[in-house]
Length: 127
Image 1 (cartoon, one colour):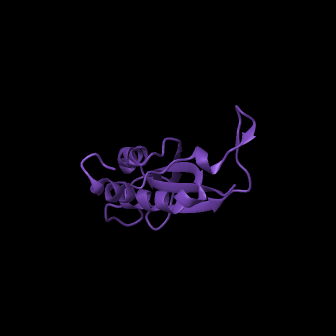
Image 2 (cartoon, rainbow, N blue to C red; image 1 turned 90 degrees about the horizontal axis):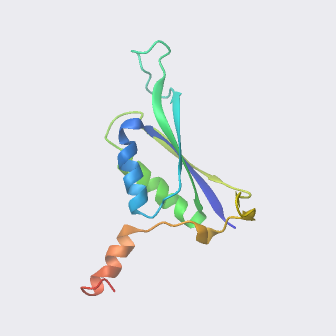
């Protein structure tokens, strides 16, 4: 089992766009956490100078992790400094609680739109 965890900390403003892009690419499972922190930018208007963002966690097959990370970066990027960051972590083990079984790579999807559109150019039916 080669599984990865994609962790993204991004602007709350871009969350709807990121969620839509993930769903469009077949990524239906992810967890959201409100987070506050500080990196290159600090909020000088708040008392503690912290910036509010959202953290997205996605468990996926190793083959999909980089594509998901790049999709998030592409959608989240609006040309501003300190828009967030994306990390990919390796996992030793991942289990489904309700089945009490290990998760498998086939349990996770990513539809590569570039591959899908290239394959659909064959004829009018998309085959």
